Length: 455
Image (cartoon, rainbow, N blue to C red; front, side, top):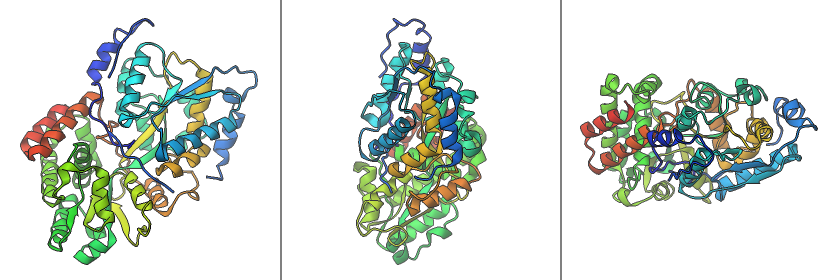
């Protein structure tokens, strides 16, 4: 998996303590998770192609480029195929730039993040690297380790007009553009088995709130099916689920206020959303504590369960299953109460200071933000583009529907569980809170732990 979080990342406080002593090149500091999707470009907009090829910054034949080093964790599966398509497109447009990919596999990106932290602190950064944006990048911006790329990158390819507010917010964790989002994975999905819900007499489209979903799962349970295919072997699925319950029951403003640290002001909302998740747990499979998210998702495919909450990467398993067709066998609705919202996680590429190849890096980041790049990458990855002007032809019907929802969304809340909405130290404490919560479902203890994590 590449899109679900890990729980062993170094805290922001620890990172900043290390960064404070990293003024010389000889300073050494050692710094010690995912959902992968499966999937389904070819006419690019004039903006992307023409700007990319005529910009004096990246096509001037007199410009001398150093070799471009890009690090990522997409070493196999859909991610591997997608990033190779990205690199091929870049090399076609920039044959004068020598691109070296330097992947670091494992740990849903945790291993790469450790490598990057060490390299940044040693003043030996790569040209760019795959990173979850938003608050994940705050340790780097606080340490003044990322370049402001508003003019040099975001001023090209009509990016500001093509990106919605959520992705642009994630690209500016400290108020300046420091990264370029490449793809989006939606988190507020509720997948379901069509035959199961029909047999149980439940209409998913009529479930208008997270609390109403409890009654729907009770009806499913009475019909002899698992209400929600959920794993509790690790805490991240519950953290992700709780965030959507909070969002769906109380709205985007409360969600944003809680992630900003104002938990006590929203105490009733936080407690109630935790209690709703506790009620959901009564309808989990009996083996929830010992299975993976893929195992849980298989219960939808096999017709044993009605509902499954997960990021859109879950649809990759459905598309890879013969005879399990979108809309006729499986379908989805926005998580109850989140209609009009698009809760997102993203991959992006930042530009570090002390860059070994600044002009080549700018060219690469401008390409990442172009229609051509996002049209090549996202159909293979099973994600959607953060640009709203990418043609839909290469995407399957599920992702086309997701693209429409994204373009028409009123707001795009950033993921808590992937660290876009909260800084690394807060995320670590939140993950601890969720791990304790699934061990005993003590709402009051979980509330106190969440308050402590976000304050």
